[in-house]
Image 1 (cartoon, one colour):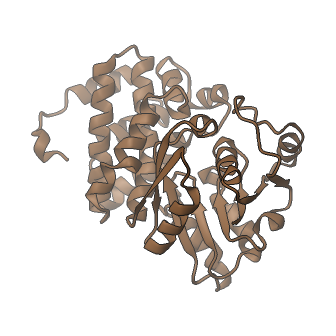
Image 2 (cartoon, one colour; image 1 turned 180 degrees about the vertical axis):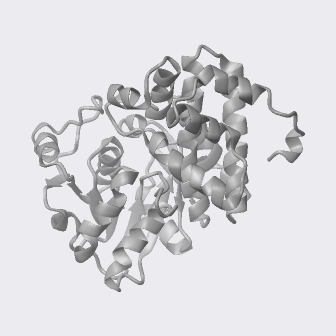
Image 3 (cartoon, rainbow, N blue to C red; image 1 turned 30 degrees about the vertical axis):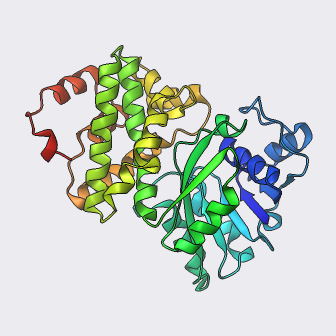
Length: 337
């Protein structure tokens, strides 16, 4: 297929390599001209040192060149840039464009998922009424995908045929792609798990152990599922690859920016200082305002998300917040999901 990838971060480049090695014609665009120059000249990504970029991948500085006459468009920009990227791409995409979104987040102003942001922005011209939108999400660190370590992921769309088409395009000997029609449930998992991963990192930074880590992962997923069910998502989505699978890898892996940022915050860094130290976008921090908005809209209690908000956005003392969490009223676990 002729594929355009919008975004040249680690995930975008890892996916570009996977698709190119599967025989597709891949063009990559970045909003940063210097990034395009470096990638084109070196065939290396600075944060994926073990990976060589195939010579067949073409890098371009004009978004039009990555959009025109492409059978598939992949959004691989951070969530905060999805809307602006969609606006820039709009003039060059046909009415029925097949689009895959890799970004994980909820837009805080609208509380839209990333696929909803893309649809909303592209349809502002009165067209693009037959878009085929797919979210690709799951436990997938770019560092591992870039060197063909076995990985599983979920292709989610209300249009099952579109989900199956994307599953077939992305499936390789190293990438197994499942399908799911609960696209918003899959996208909600992708956004919310980053906040829980921050909380796990904070716990590690405070010096707490595996008991606390396991509790945060388990109860964190209970909170995410509680919100999702209130929003009409399918419960089984939260206990699949896009849910518990992605949460486990994000909350425990050395590759996780959210986990590493949380560790720094637990050690006393401010959120801004932690982001500067990581040197890349920390999606969980951006997701917190939207999570708080969804909690309020759907009247769902999420103590761990609220705790992360208090620490990261309000400057509360982490140890004091942990004390409050531990002293909450006892509950029946079977009834608190």
